[in-house]
Amino acid sequence: MPKQSNNMSGLQCLASEKIWFDKRCYDEAEKRFYEGANGPSAQQQVKTTLQQAKGRQQKRQHRNSSSHAGGDQELVSRMKSLELENQALHKVIGEMRAALQKLESRVGVLEKTPAAAAAVVPCAKAAPVKQVENGDDDDDDDIDLFGSDEEDEEAARLKQERVDAYAAKKSKKPALIAKSSILLDVKPWDDETDMGKLEECVRSVQMDGLLWGASKLVPVGYGIKKLQISCVVEDDKVGTDILEEEITKFEDFVQSVDVAAFNKI
Image (cartoon, rainbow, N blue to C red; front, side, top):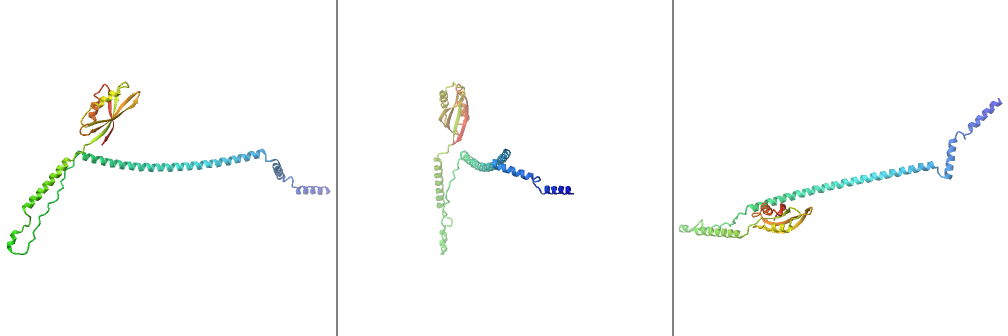
């Protein structure tokens, strides 16, 4: 019996003792103590460093995504503004083309059909009508209700004089002469062609309604230069076909002739 009571008292002592059951808590406390004294362990430092690097990477990715989104939005807005400007330019160009076509058609009509001489003659004054006074029957023979023949002849004569004066004035007015400015490209055979002689040959072409202008040599390639010369012609007297035909007659110098620009004056 005494032995059994001793065993029971030992178990009770062990039951009241907590050091072995709370060993993990004591180990954690000891670890914290040494870490506070010597600083965190290398493993804890590596873990902290990794967490900080991960946080910085996430912030950088967030900033990059924000900047990309802002750049895309700015690019879209710029593209929309460019599209609106392009549409406005197309509209303005269309209006200018329509106005130019109307102007060209109007000039063509004026050039082809001369204006008719429209005589603006004021109407002859009506002959005055005499008022009939109350009187004897003998005075009725002197009343002229429609005017005399002399007044009709005077009105016709005035009308004819005004028509003749208007026609004479229109005949003295100079007629509109249609002219064009032409820029020609005259090409030689090779780089050994005398370009000064070629220009002399071109300018030797003389016609009624043709006036030569400035000229210059323009490089073409491989040492070859072409003569670019301007001229003013009257459309009714000189055409581009006649000019090309006359210039290409100088076969020793001229290879070909092209019309670089053609503008109405």
